[in-house]
Image (cartoon, rainbow, N blue to C red; front, top):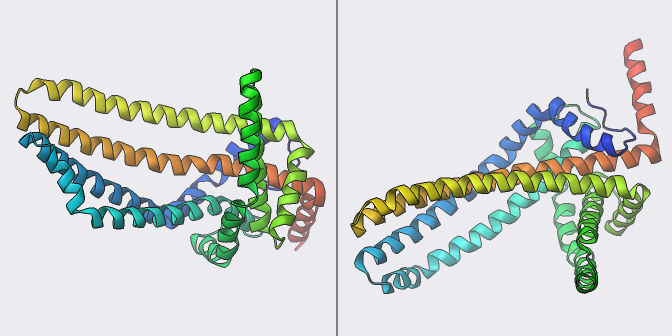
Amino acid sequence: MFQLYKIRNFSDLFNDTFAFFRTEGKNYFKNYIIINGVLLIILVVLGFVVGRFFLENFMAAMVSGNSGELYNGFTENAGFFIGAGLFAFILFLIISIVNYSYPVLYLSLYEKTKSPSANEIFQAMKNRLGKIVLFGLLFLITFLPLMVITGFVCGILAFLIITIPLLFIVIAAFACWIYLAFYDYISTDNGYFTSMGKAWDMLIKKFWPHVGSTIIFFAIIYILQLIISLVTSSIGSIFMATDVDSSPYVEDQAQVITMVGIIMFIMFAVSIIFTFVLSNLIIINQGMIYYSCREEEENRSLETEIDLIGRDVE
């Protein structure tokens, strides 16, 4: 059984993040697929349909040698692209809400029910939907202006001294602050600004372990995303280099490019899915920070041990 409430140092924050996935990974990702999988598939299908439409018009213009056909294809189907773009935007917002709230709610339910079910998580998400949306709106008038001002100051300093390490620290600190505020706001009945203040106290209590852990997990996610991007782009380049130049006929080249385009869209879809899935890594890591800070304040692990002793006696 994974111990959620625990005082953690830097190495514990790193190790316990992976320990959580080793212990709860099967149930966690099973429910994640149940709740978020359909939405991701719809997003991928939408991207494939729009991409295929673009490729068909591009190929038609290439075969005919008339670039105006590509423009006409877009103008004649402007309604389709506007509707698809609006639908994709709304769908992306819904996926983001589900994706970012899922780890927070999972850990919140894990306090009371070990290995929560998809139905319990979905019900918790439904009950907290108002707070989740409100957090996003209030973020625009609180955290975002602070980030812009801080980024502007760091940008000025970048011209004066070498501040790349400082930029990493500032970005990680803001990210940690936002995640901790989100955890506290969604997991408790605190108001937004109360959670914002508590998150700041949590951040600075062990500033370097918290920021250092955040930087490391951002780096891990970046490296994994970079590997996926390199693999997908390399596969597309290999197809283009071996097939397109092998035929002197424009029609054959168009067919090859269409096939390569479809393959690239598939790879792009895989990349999108991996991006959303990998984001769970950093959010769970922030959860380890959040529950470690709460343990220092509330000593909840002692209550859990007493409850377990009571169950053993029974």
